[in-house]
Length: 314
Image 1 (spheres, rainbow, N blue to C red):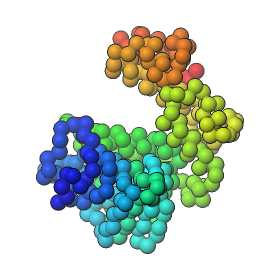
Image 2: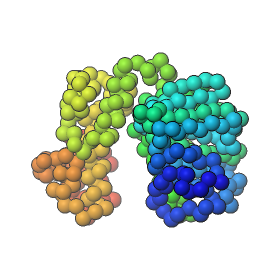
Image 3: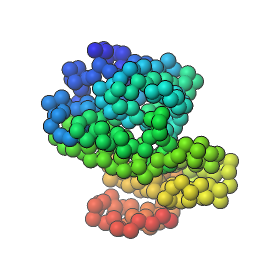
Image 4: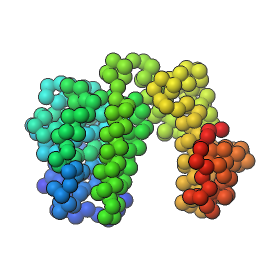
């Protein structure tokens, strides 16, 4: 069994994991990581279990070589570059690619030296596992492209966070979210020829830039300027690959962050406005009320009872 020092820095939101629960198969050459592990006493009691999952920031010399693996596994690239070879089929890894392997699948995963991989992974087992894996929209090389990267990334993140919580509901929440993830993968899987066209590459960059910089972006026109494309072309990309406009996506991210600040911290309305890029608190309040159906100050006091059923972007 590998020592904790060889696993990189584990970032834990819950209590530390007992060494006896830590699998021996975790990769070396990980500079930052966040893991969850299912209690072995719980395994085998249900039709589907998630024994292990997490996120890993890989170092330049990260390489995993396996002739087989004990679990079915799904991994999702969020940053960097690398390679995945499964049963003789090689795929170049980059953000937006989902890949998987099953027991008996020989595979190699490696990181690019200049652009190190950052990825999520989930291991799953149980009577349902084989059927689930066979239904995944993976090509012969065990990979697929994802149309809405942020949706899949957020679900992986939610599963990892749920798995780290010291709650009896943690396992049920993880498996329920995993079922949602599978549906989202089926909904968003793309053909390789569609995913590798220039239009999708530009959309993928736009989606990443939006999720990383939404606090600073003032409008979707700012996003288009950063990408050196026209606002009209950006709108067409979102119409083609997403179920929302760039303006609606930007507003949703800003409002969700602001709502979390208002409810979860002592930030004032002005503080929340400034944090998500609004110079004018009054303009922020108008957008917030139009989106949630109530003013920010009232939302802070009654977050559950005042949200409008119909949310609209400004």
